[in-house]
Image (cartoon, rainbow, N blue to C red; front, top):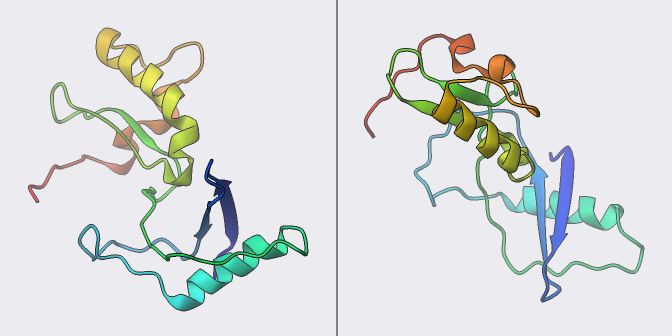
Length: 140
């Protein structure tokens, strides 16, 4: 079941609840075909309720599923692809993409514009895509 939960309250007072539910799996569904199990939805709701005040009650409106982009070592891949000229990649941020987005954008823009692999905030050497071997792009 889920081992981490998060909830975000919208201005209209609805809450988006999420949980990291399963081990890493290879995506087999096409986009939009992902379906959460009712058991997972209930576990996420219970996890959020357990972390809230006793009088807090969630009334779910919808259940959705999606995959979080991860890598085998749980670090993003960011940098130039050595075997493809002028091709850069910044993927695999998992659920931290929103938080890491500004720093990723800044260091990637700097890398593309100047060829430098670090700035005052980020050193790309730990995130280099070559750590997994050559990356090949396959047409979908």
